[in-house]
Image (tube, rainbow, N blue to C red):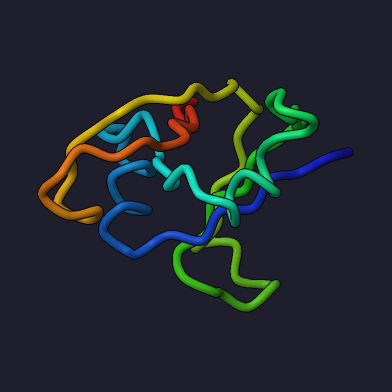
Length: 95
């Protein structure tokens, strides 16, 4: 089974867990392109594992496992990335 692991800050993890955050963003850069693209096409996983920080392997309260729902490339403005619009991977994390 293939998994995509995403480690998040507490506030974003809590929003996903509460169902108020549907998409997680990763900057469109070389680091994330290597992990999320294969020959210019999106990779596919069976599951996505969302973790609050870097929890111990046995701490399941800080992990959410969801079915893979896909991703897209978008341009957004978000305080985390600064004041200018940036290109991002928009990863669907809704249940």
